[in-house]
Amino acid sequence: MKKRKLPELITILILTLIVVAFWMFFTIYRVFTNKPATVVEEEIIQPLDANFDNQTMQEIQDRSFFE
Image (cartoon, rainbow, N blue to C red; front, side, top):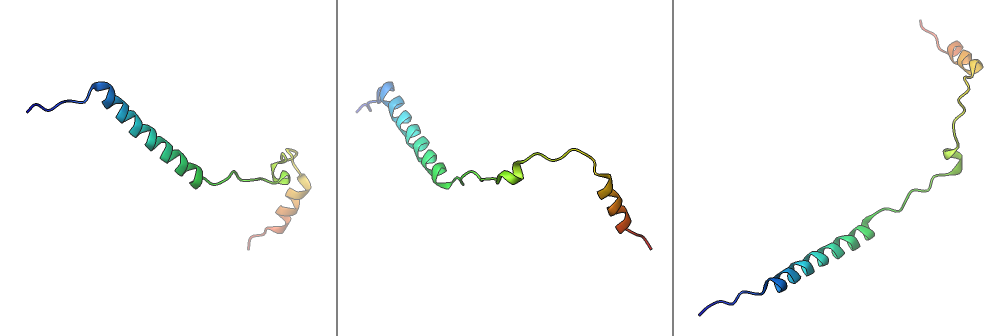
C-alpha cells in the first residue's frame, strides 16, 4: 500500500495554525505577567537647578576635618 502525502497547502495551513496558537499563547502570557508602568511623582520629575551654590559648598568644607 502506498502512503498518501498530505497536500502541501494543508501542511502549510497546519504549521501556520500552530504558529498562530503559540503566538496568541505567549501574547496572553506576556499581558498577564508584565508589571504596569511605574508612576513617578511630579516633584521627582522636575529639572535640577544648574546654578552652583557657593555657600553650601563652603558649609560642607567647614564641616569636614581631618585629624
